[in-house]
Image (cartoon, rainbow, N blue to C red; front, side, top):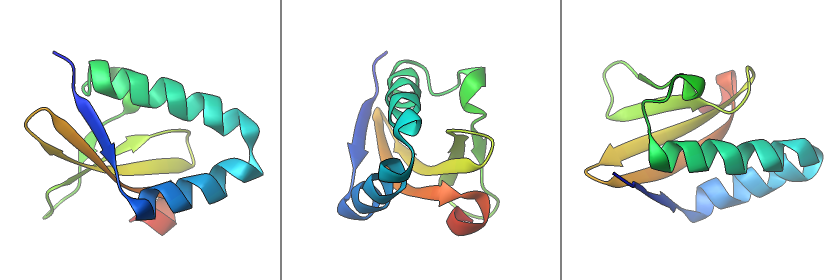
Length: 87
């Protein structure tokens, strides 16, 4: 099953700011989002639910996390940044 990835302006702005600092992250993000759309449970994403919320976290790198919300076949990209920044 294919999942639809939906971002918002907040995610886009933070992502753009983060990616301009490191061009290699742009490639990693594309691969990560493709994997997410094909199989959100793929082990490379290190998906886990955040306690007492409806949000999940996936890892772009060991330092950078993407906060998501899932609803049916839709995956909403909510935030991106360092572990401390996103949580």
